[in-house]
Length: 227
Image 1: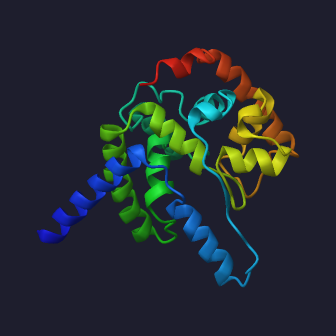
Image 2: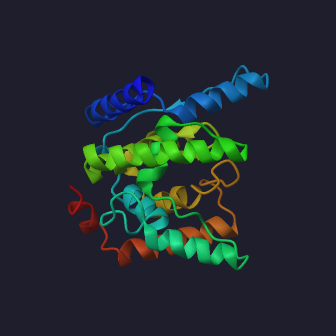
């Protein structure tokens, strides 16, 4: 009984602190750096620099919401309609993007590990649910979105809006254009496979779709409704 209680207390404290303190790294960043070193790539370095949400072009968080979680403002961490849609589609043998919300993605990327085996993935999923509940309880939606755009991987070893803006276009994240933001959001499903600076046909098509979806969800007015 003592160990579960200690974990629960420690994780609550962890999440409460991170509502106000910007993390220098995420669990996924650490794992990627260790992976590179284990492969003998001693020159590999994580690229990351925190930027507050008001110092990032609004087009990027809007593009991320449009691409990844259009029900972000209304759900409590889990989009059950999207989960059911994914389950039904998978049952028919179709390929569909996962139904993870931005809150779930933050929980996984910030706190957890990349499990490869089935048992490991199920254990991680349990922790992901727990951390998602904590994040939704203690953080406003604006903090969740701010965290996401700062720790998401936009290329191999490139984490967060500022590092991506510098790496691909040599500019500050505050100066990202809507087209550039849409490209960054378009590579999120597979950031090591796709390139935001030199997009192929798939990324360009998806980026165009994302820009249309940004207008659909209300543009910059959408961000104003986040607490």
